[in-house]
Image 1: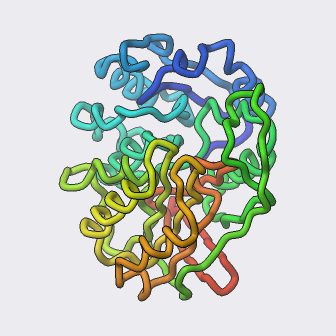
Image 2: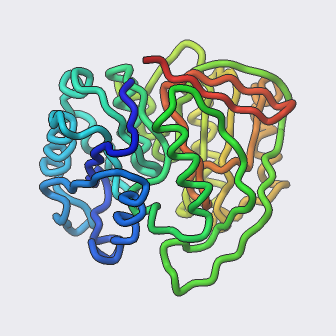
Image 3: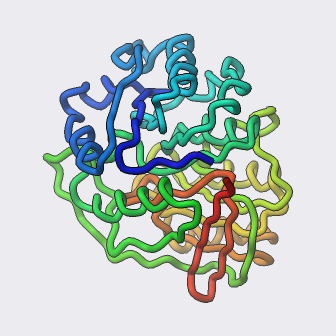
Length: 319
């Protein structure tokens, strides 16, 4: 799997929401400047400024931008602008042979879950769940986020480590105060496990159920998190569907839930207790995964070794 390094060329594109949903190009220049300071060269897709009634671009434009990025030999990696609501619209129209013949790093989170898992399912190419382009404009918590991203996208073997503190505030709005809480990764059920990492955003991952775009490795570890949009009742429903589609995980790793989800320790325990499998396998939760900040980066399709005794999560990505 080709990784990136200092001097690599990153193409920024929008498989879901447009940059206009985030205030436009100039409002996100801090992300461009930070990535350039990290040593990367950036370019933006042909249809980058297109936007419609859904704050997105047309299916044709988004597909064309993805194909162009994979076909361009000068592009070393791809970053999604942000998540959104509709990246699964693209799945039937992507040229997976083109992608497989031009493997390169692609990274994003939230709604990009659909694209990332589909590409892995259809091509076997590992993909990366981590910061989007706009995530790099965040100030507080960025040191951890950038360091975790760099470890994952530049090394074939890496470990996930807890941040020092986290926030469930609007990181993208500098006018709002942020409140940080000490990070504590927690164990619901003890054990050790090995498998292939799949998953991401719970509601988006669930959209792939029953389609050709759902990854089905023989031994898998589920990484699951949810956005601010769903409250705990909806999360519980989606989790049930995922565990019906994936009934034999080797382990499950849950990200922290944003405050808008109204998830409490009591509700979380009650939700997990519905599923006997979660008392038979290792389960770690409250990790730095996605919709609270900062977030780590992990490899969909990567080999994972997990041990709750020391809360270690180690990844290896085959060449």
